[in-house]
Amino acid sequence: MTALAGTGTLTRLALRRDRLTLPLWALVTGGLVASGPGSLEGLYGTADARAELAASMTANSSLRSLYGPVFSDSLGGLVAWRFGTFAAVLAAVASLIVVVRHTREEEETGRQELLSAGAVGRRAPLTSALLAALTLNAATALLIVAGLAGQGLAGALALALAVGGTGMVFATVAALAAQLTESARLAKGIAGGVLGLAFVLRAAGDSTDATGGSLLTWLSPVGWAENVRAYGDERWWVPALIAGAVLVQTVLAYGLAARRDVGASFLATRPGPAAGRLASAGALALRLQRGALTGWGLGFLLGGLVFGGMAEGAAELVGDNEKAREIFERMGGQAALTDAFLATMVSLFGMLAALYAVGAVLRAHGEETSGRAEPLLAGSLGRIRWAAGHLAFAYAGSALILALSGLGLALSYGHGLGPILGASLAQLPAVWTLAGVAVLLWGAVPRAAGAGWGVAGLCLALGWIGPALDLPRAVLDISPYAHLPKLPGGDPSWPPLLLLGALAVALTAAGLTALRHRDLQS
Image (cartoon, rainbow, N blue to C red; front, side, top):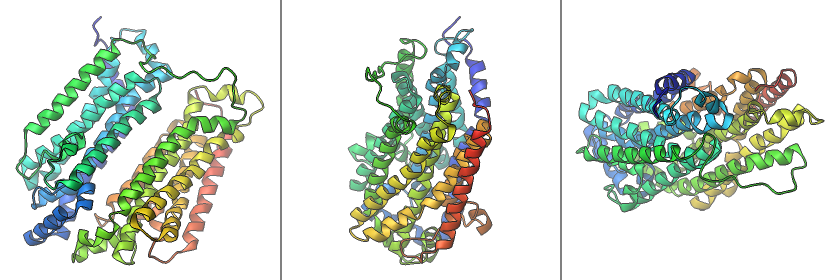
């Protein structure tokens, strides 16, 4: 038996298990880029308008830190500038999730040990996970090429390699993280932290250098993606650099995988105290959820500080372009442009907060499916009281991180603490509605509980790119965020908030009722 025996079977199994999520990730990421020419052509249809936009972006350090520098004022070049960085980040997130899911998560649940008892080589599980990530990134790259080929095949190919290559860089980062820790959540946290650091380094480098040549930018794999310079004097040696990083990290991951047992790790788990101190279900939920809440809270606070400093530059982003102004108003309200920009950022944080809330709900589902909840519920602890500990973090935790984002926005912007904080908290009914959907799926259809991620992702996509694509109002209204008042700057409207709040309560109650009347899953 070789070290790669069974790789084909495990790869087919991984692709079958992810037969819905992989195409969805590819369509969202590739479709985001492919939709760029149509939306930007409507905004900047003439060469003069595109040249003016490129010049204003080059002069604005805050916006360079968000989107990166503009290397070409062609339509393809503007698409690469506007969507390239975010597409690379999306590909990275999807890739690290896929790799951890099929490596460390399989070991954590014990399924990998059963598989390894058969004719499965030591390196087969890791190889199959990386092949699944490669399939995802290849599909994304093909969609990008198909969508942008009309703007120039060379530029489309360069952008596709940049986005797909970044995805594979972080797939191999996740492969390394999966060898270091026994927890799938911690492995995702390590890989996600590396991705966050890479984005911050790129943003810091681009804010000081309009050419993308800063040392900080070159220290970031996300910076490598932008320095491919799609549609702007392409640098074909940069994809080779990306491929070299993927190769080196793959070799390191294989080396680590060969030196540990299934289920073991190189970072030892810290032992608990000799005498237990968790006296309630709420205390246990705190122990399990506090790490995620801390990470999300810090991320939202820092994000608010970054975006708040860009508020004054909002007018420079659109200049006198009325169509661009209309898009910002559709996304962020009908008030002054600065308020519209702040409302857009508040809405973005609100949509991201739903991902935290869904994750907190599904942490309870993970405790159930792993078998750790059954011993607790075998005693006097009721299911509702056990679930309430986790749901408290989903609902109160989302309020806390939104408050931190509002605080960061107000501190960086310099004034308006009350209105901005209120606008941030006004996102809660929509966040809680999506959390309620996750509770209902977990309680009523536990095998489909993971679809909660899909619902939250759909709402994020509708809110992020829906207004730019000028989608029909009926489609945008699918998202609960479309019914929220646009604050700050707009008129507060209580009926939608109350209706969404009531819907969230109803969904949560229905989910908990279903949880009480079904068997536990394992």
